[in-house]
Length: 392
Image 1 (tube, rainbow, N blue to C red):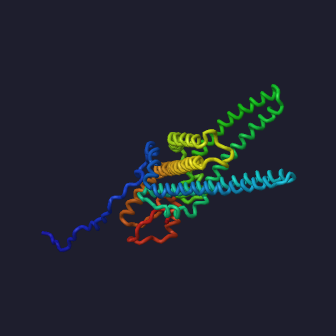
Image 2: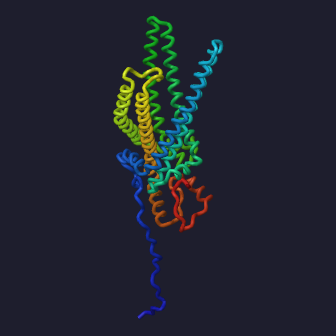
Image 3: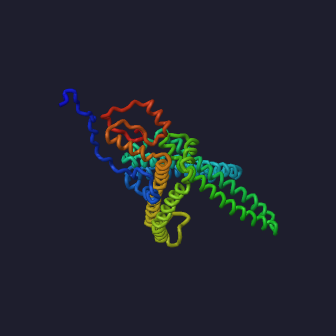
């Protein structure tokens, strides 16, 4: 019988710590089907209604109030100056007033662009957290956009400016042909007008196709700006790479969601618009008066209430559709990274580490940014509660 004194049982290590199953996220952590790309954006608002809907309505109300104050002040100043102007100064005052109103309108547009960028950034952060099973509050979403708001607003402004420049160039080409033809008259003028119309239609169709392609190629830049903390130029290049080989999937999902939102808006808004028209006809049977002096108070109340309901409905519908459309781009962005870069494996490991209480990084960061973050930030202790991405 052999000596057993030197025998030791094999060491298998400690049993792994038990962790509760992770909470279900917004989407399964795997590449999504096309049906999931279309359906998930409509679940985003329902999953975190208080934070997203409240933020969207608040931003839209601020845009409306700001635009009314800016444009209304400029218009009121112009009308006041025109009413008290002398005949000698009337032309100069009218020219200055028109210029002031145009500048005020541009300021209102810039304010709207900034607000749109902020809302889009909030939606990006919320969807990214929803994928990981988090449901952040409105204050957390606002704090998470810090440092990225101006970059996102700059990108939205750049897209809008590019569209305006393209439309202006197209209108200039058509005007250069149509206006001389209308001025010359005769058969030659009619032919020139016909050529201008044909050129306008062809160039308009070509510009629409070009714009749709560019929009689809850069539609993921907003998500890259917020989640990967890239600059505008780097985010556009990043979106260009992510859509390579999957353009029609990216473009088709977003366009279909926009079309669904538009159709639903028309179906819901048509009865409201008809009710508003009937309310106006009931308040003013002979037509809307040019001056409300001497008009019955009940008629003014009916008109005011109906217009207020219509404005409230417009704000609510605008808030809902803006959140859904912004969420579509983020869902497509996550799906493309899952397909091209294996982001689903990174997110799965993040969820597992979170359940086991291990130190967490930023699962949506690019490898370069994640490496810099690991070098600069100390590792959190094991007992510290994990924090959602976005460092709020």
